[in-house]
Length: 429
Image 1: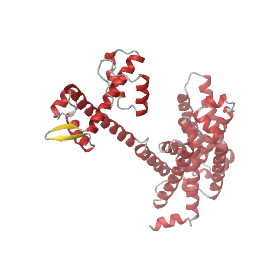
Image 2: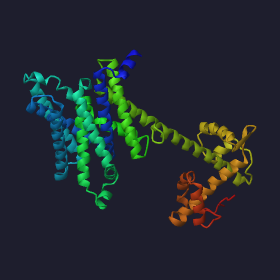
Image 3: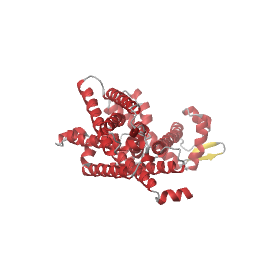
């Protein structure tokens, strides 16, 4: 508890620099990365992140200093060259973009490692710590770094706000943007420049190896929580800020723990939780929804079987045992035994001794399923000209998802028919 209070009091200048620097880098990367993510160019961020290393090394060789301004300029130049190389290879050859990205990543990163090794063996005392650009060293951030990163983060967020509509349009529909006369190439140039700048700024915190995760993971997680781009940007920024704060705190209470990798671990953990638990789009939600749909289909099919047996026997309220239900339609025995009490609880069935009987609500429910089945069979035969003996399976599927509005349109379209293609009566209330 004491360490928690000490950390969040921000009385220690080093803690302030590291924490604010991580938050600024994470937020700006998440916002810019959202458009890269939506344009389905996530791998480009990875290539750019690995391509900044030779620029950092060349900037150090030429300047002889680790001034962050020089290093950022050098990284920015080689990152831009890598993007030009990807576009050149893609447009001027038969090589696809993913292959061009792989080639670029390998070549530039290999060149960076070679230059870094040369620097380390040069005997230059000021090169100490330069290798931290590989995996990041957020704990080494100082006040000067914070001013530089803060300025760059402000530029990134300001430009995104200024070109928000244009970025949104090219992220979702580039062809429409061209048709209405937007300078798509220039807008893409601006967005690409922001992406490069976001990567370049973030490498000192999480390194070239992990920077792509900071660019793509927050928007990927945010995408599971909303369909609105504005909300997505806010959520991605908040997730990035939380990850930056959490990574700095973990590094503070456990000095042996590196800040950058922990930032990535936290945001990755949040992303996994989002993939699993997010409403509407999460894996768990979809699984529960599919399970509910399967259960609904099973319940409706059981009521349909009751109705069809009653239709055949001219007695819809007769009592039926499990054996007679299975004679009409095969159901998994365990699922049938489990579902019958559920239908009783819902008021569609009632139990008479060891047998089951439709209630009035159950009769109407089963009647509607049969009605939709026969209407759809008739529609398929009359309008799609499918043979009557080929429409049953399609009708079995569609009968469970026809809404009341579609039901009314279907009746009107078919002129309220009384018989299906098999000359069975279509039951109306």
